[in-house]
Length: 222
Image (tube, rainbow, N blue to C red; front, side):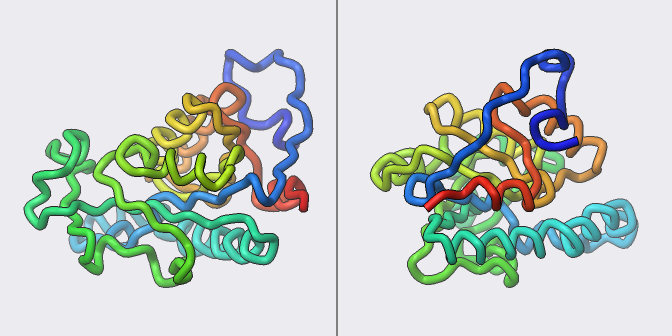
């Protein structure tokens, strides 16, 4: 099974196969969403045990694959752009409501703090753009929309976490702005594989095309 038949929801179970994907390098950006230090550990031993499958997927699959995708994009002159959660005020007053609510989504990550930085394996280079957001969508709470339009970007390849939260929110915002969106499933993770796979089937075909890393590398064109 390849990307044309995988991750089909009820809505698209019997739909025709999509056309081949072509990503002109000069019109394509790779957006890395929220792969930040804060998500790579838990202070509580019980929580560490509960999150171990996620940490293993991140360290064994998502981060190495995303590093490879970043390098491939650099070699092909495809723009790498990084989005990370970070509030402008130390007390977080500028955060959106979704990041102020109690529970898992409560995030207080001052923009210059170590916890909010991109993980060391994926650090942006000097000329690569990073947008800082206090929203789930990387498009809604930043100037990313303007940046993409100004650079002539029409296609956005998405990687990052969490598939069912900030990745999904960003994908939906991008397609509403008429960008063509591709999600690289083995460069993404949710807290559990069940959540990850469920969200991929929800967003596939209507909001984006879900592909693998090996597949997306065949779509780039000079």
